[in-house]
Amino acid sequence: MTNRRLFNRNTAFVIAAGFACCFAATASAQSTTSQMEGLKLSNDQPIQIQSDQLEIKEQEKKAFFTGNVQVVQGSTTMKAGKMTVLYTGEGASVTSGNANIDKIFLDDTVFLTSGTQQATAEKGEFNMATQTFVLSGKQVVLSEGPNVFKGCRLTVMMETGQAKLDACGGRVEILLDPKSRQPQPKQ
Picture (cartoon, rainbow, N blue to C red):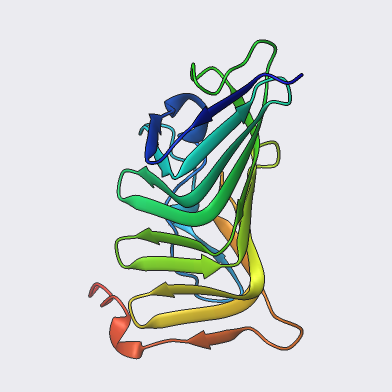
């Protein structure tokens, strides 16, 4: 029989050890491949997680957050219907904060926001081994103010911020507002 723990409505954890490096701000892209500085790793701030329910399966090294999942780190907020966390480490426990996060899966409409920057998708995946974050679905929308980028798969290398937006069988759609450009310093 597996060791199971169940926590109910509005369970809040600050799990800085593993999660702190996972969720960082989204940023705008200027083309289908771009630097996304806001999606670099952030190890210096704690994470607060709230959900309607949390089920931890210690022997399987899995944590299941379900129902109105909200994750906050600094000025960044992530919302999803479900979040599954896979972790590693002998004797590791999510509740004690000593778990090494392997992968995080997000499902049921994912929404990321930080300041004026937002991203939405059907699902997402953080792979800690490859330091890769992927948002995917029928339509992934990335926006900063009036600038909007649409595709089906956004892949971000979290260590460098390098990003790639793939099309939905057709072409990537980009709407840029020239008024949103930062003025260039005079030389």
